[in-house]
Image (spheres, helix red, strand yellow):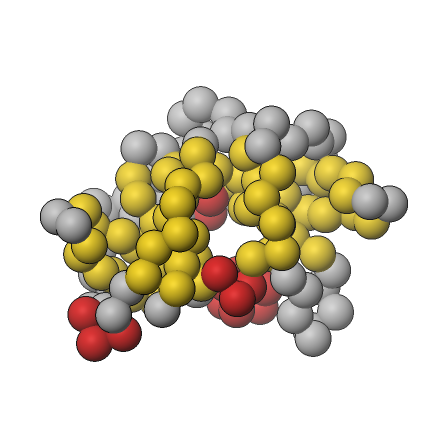
Length: 139
């Protein structure tokens, strides 16, 4: 898997680069009152509305500091519109051997792994692989 590494709430994540449209650093967005906790807000991206989800909140890690960088995802055919993930830091391109990906498991009782498709260790670091399709199904 060719992926993009991400940092959210001090943890490492990876998302398949084939589902990433672009990375926007210091993304300005408007919070949505009474939205689900994971929905940080909406943003204007070239005239289109993008729903921004806090990756930390989505995974049950709480809000912590307000993430400012957005990984904009390609739209899926379900018609839910465009989405992006707010992260503390978008990282580098990484390559994870598919045979090295393990099933996800809880690392704490508060964590929600329903949006994690697997775990992989690369260079001594543990990456949680984000399941973008399940995010689009829920939101």
